[in-house]
Length: 409
Image (cartoon, rainbow, N blue to C red; front, side, top):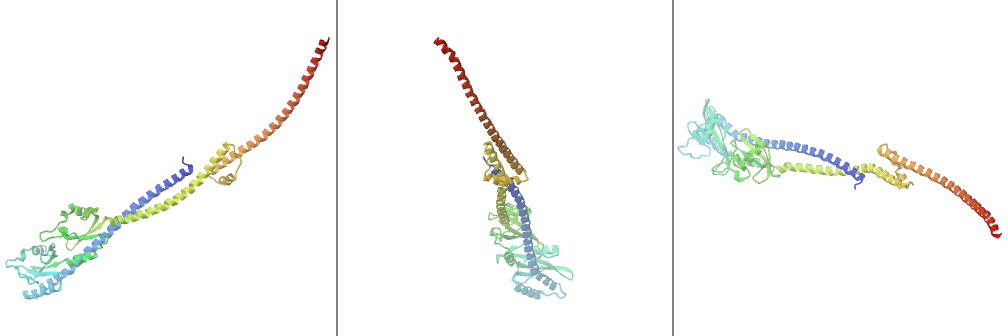
């Protein structure tokens, strides 16, 4: 059977630990939510940085077209030979430009590479030309894989006017590998994170998995891979199973210039790692507090149980009429000074023992008196018995005398 001291300690410790663990559980949940918000905010800022870098890169590269547009719209617009010289010079100076050209409404096209086009080539029938003419603004075509270099190329084109009327389109084919290199340099892959980029039609432009890369035959769309997991992760911000089997979170940012989407993919372990560290810290805290609570429980338990145990022993001794105070009994007299119920109980038991001791003393005194009186009564009885014996003897003698005289006669 457990002692009252043990019960008190276990009850105090159990209730305290339950309250502590509940409080720490709530704190851990709130902290996890806070860290999730912090991570989301950090990832949003990161993807925004990437999209800003892409926009800045395109603005710098496309500034060439703005300069060329100014030349073509000047009062002294260049002839075909001068135009070719301008285009060739620009192409030679910019490594990222694979070709740059001017296309006229007359179907004439002058390119900086000097490549001869088929006689039946009609530049005005090309998508880039028609899109610019319809929208009357700069357009960014979907990237495609250049068969010559095996690298991704994008066409950027914009209109120019002569005498205030639409005269044609100036455009360039831009190798975007340097852009990819810039993005990859920015991404911190030490924790398993990576970035992929989609065009305005959600076709993959950049992805570390070669299976998702565009080929000469076709582009790979977002909806065609991982059973739509990427789309779900982007729309709902839920952990998805990536192509490598790991759980990942996705954060997106739009490139306003051309409608591209930058997607930052972060392993779920990056989120849970911080939570695990937090829970580990909470665990150490719980352990430390548990030790403190255990010590306090022992102290509190002893302060409550010891007087009770002592009084229990006192009552047992009283029951067995062991009324002699020992040194230990005297040491426990300090409990009488307590002002709580324990002190009252100790005081009551002490008074009971004192009353019993007084009663025993009185009984002892009374017994001595009775013993003395009984001795006196005994002596009197002995004297009376002796007197009675004398009387009996005398009577016998008197009775024997007459009988003797009769027998003689």
